[in-house]
Length: 312
Image (cartoon, rainbow, N blue to C red; front, top):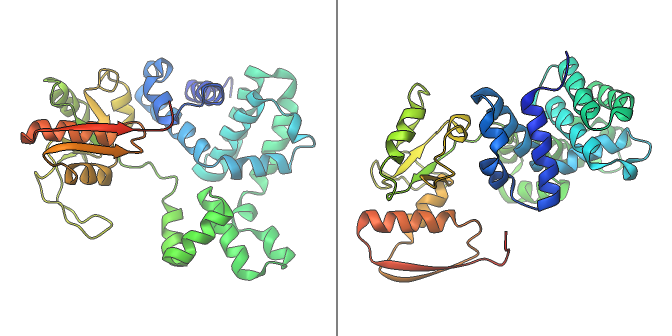
């Protein structure tokens, strides 16, 4: 295999940019011209690599550092290249030979002198994948007990901190947490809200989802909290949009649509009322967008003040 793939090179560039800018990964992906220049398959892989690595930094670094003599002296270019390859090995199930080879090529692109080191580290990570996920090292120590080893295994499978995993288990039980972890790195269904002021957005969106087979307008299924939202109650909502195809258009750049979690769209729509709305902790403003769009569609006279501490 010669040279790192375009998707992996773009993913590495974005991860390095995130360290410098402190931006949100989703925002960086949405704004990336490099992602848009990729074909749909590569764009989808780049997105999955960036979001997956960001979600599992802690576990990835623990593994990388375990096989590095001087982890504190590793530069960010090498570390992020190793993170990508380690994420593929541990969480994506990429064929080990391909993941190691591509990881070495990524390192070669940025730090040729570190290729031997990268090859050695990634080969050892590939060899220990199953025992790492099963927390065999914790079971062998025996000091923290069988239940603790099960918590560590859950945490590693979900790319989560151990303390957070333990709290989730305390909250919803071990079996439910296990189901949550099993879906952690599956591509999440993308829901969008269409801008009512963009007359072409809905048709452009329909065009890119044709043939996808699972995109839907509106919905009528029970949510996690038991509430059932009937077809047509959320106008402008389209579910299960193929993310790679969406990134390949200018819909996000021109604000023709906003990507917003389905449940967040339900909350934003339910919060609509005549008069003034104060939104505290508005984040990127996606729920603000949904509220404004729905108010315009439904003829509700309201205005919003949205507050957020972070300038980003």
